[in-house]
Amino acid sequence: MKKKKQLVNLLVASTFLVLVVSGLMAYFRPFSIKTTGLHSLMGFFFILLIYLHVKHNFTGLKKSFQGKNLVLTFSITGLLTALFIWQPKPVQAVLGLSNNLGAAQDRFVMNDKGMIYNYTPTPKYKLKIEVRAGKNYQIEKPPQMAIWLQNQSFYHIKTLHSTQNTEELPYWSWKVKEYNKAKKEAEENDGEVLAVSGATPNSSFDPRDYILPERNEEPFYLMIEVNQPGDGNESYQDQPSMIYRIEIDNKYPTAFQVFELMGYSKYDDQDESWQAYYPDGSVTTALKLIDSALLTVERD
Image (cartoon, rainbow, N blue to C red; front, side):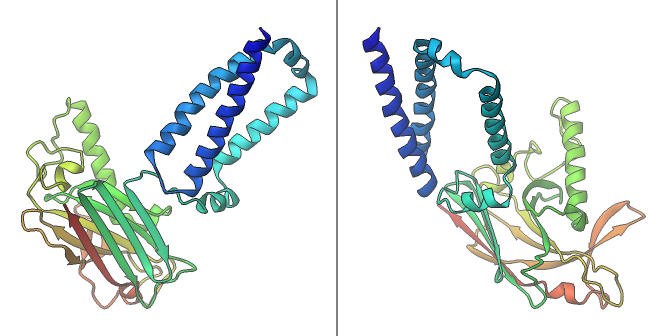
């Protein structure tokens, strides 16, 4: 029995060492499925060892399960758990020091020069959007922005990125609302999509069916809506958001494309929808939020 306890204790120590090393590697090094797998699987083994350790030492450990110690232990554990899930700015700052950006499909970076967004639906197909800041771009109070995909029928198919204050992005918000409505109707009709007639034969809700060349040769659109709150002028208390668009055609691929100004957002009371109107003299500084926007597409 004594030898079993010693073996379990040594295994706990050695396994804990592996968890420490793999945890540090996961934090300081770029994402690796091998490191993540090692840490996760060794963690499961560690749970088994802890169970055996508690089982063999339960009599002695029972003395710790008393009053103040128990309350204090659960309080500290609960507090740290809530803190790490909530992730206030100090915790985010610590996580931001990590070189592990995860296995996410997208990356978004905003600074005083503008914004860079990378989207990789597959390793063989990569989209990169570079937005250069205009004269009225404010880094201390950056504009609200949404980036999304639309099919040939101008229906929203996927939001790639949106900032927190979505009320300042009415055109995109309305597109998303219509998308969710159509998707709900499709589910109620056993997957038969009635409201979204699109570029693919099955009118899929999977964005890859529109983006990837092997699935679809029809063009689709990449959209940007940008709005700077509080930028009033003689015509508006708050100027409307600006909408930019680019058409991507996998049948006639190009590596570089420049976004074109589609217009400013305005609600159409007759159609009960948000539309894009080409700028007139009423829109001024909002036109200078973005200097230029470039799309780079890498196809392997």
